[in-house]
Length: 373
Image (cartoon, rainbow, N blue to C red; front, top):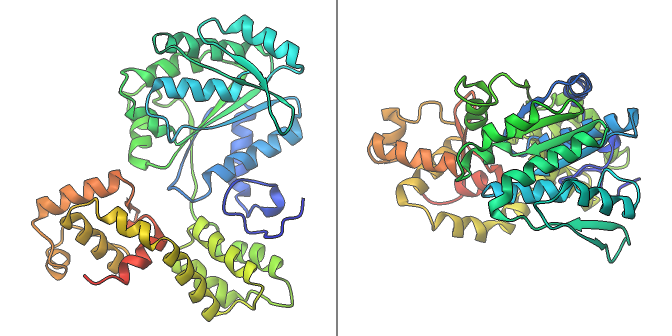
């Protein structure tokens, strides 16, 4: 399938529109095919979701009879919502005919009420479920039993898996681990963006998933490789020069989604990409979110807002408690700064890199630098 705009900012289409990650993809495929579960960790918008689906694409090409399931648990708030999402993704997907789907689902699932309906547009059968809050654990057991009994090699990706650690129910990680370790034909990817939470879940001897997976992290795509990928789409009539690409790459420090967004807009303008065009696109994108940024900051304390602005203006702050930094921006006492910092990190407005603290949303950082302090 040929796209009108090859610079995808959401979802996955095919390897033709996916840049690099060959090394990471090979590691994932090799691990999963050999029965090793994976933990994938990186900041948001670095391309974890695309990489997972890229690996699934190659697995399905090699073995069309397998089953793959991608489940984003970011918006789940408790075990019930997790089980319902999991059930909706899996139920009926391992059987060939609608009649067999209904029969198999009825055979395995006694604790929930599956309803077989047909999609209004595609005509394909689909199953929705209701889960009794008192039977969540039993329902979860039945989902895993269904996967195991299918006889197929199944690959399940739980994206933003750190959300599970915030559920109000106790022992959810132990519950999941107790099922997962006894599924020889089902292999898992646990993907997450909150590094400190994922690290605690998979590296701490006190947690159920300790040393149960192969760990993989992803970093920025190589500049030259990314340029070769991007430039071939612009072509000879309006070439994307290395200079302009590196200007974009360096401005966003190799952060994949932001680079893709800029390239998507530049490609859509159908003009020769130059510095003026790049600035115009960035200004356009930032302006579109200006109202939302303002509303967001209105819900935070003055200390938090001032700290966020200070980090944005510095671009990266290595020592957040240094007297020079605090004095230069007129911040409050160190204790107040630390309290505000913890909240900003928890809400994913600030992220700690190896080099220091940055504003997570790169476009928001540009907007903050334009605001009076």
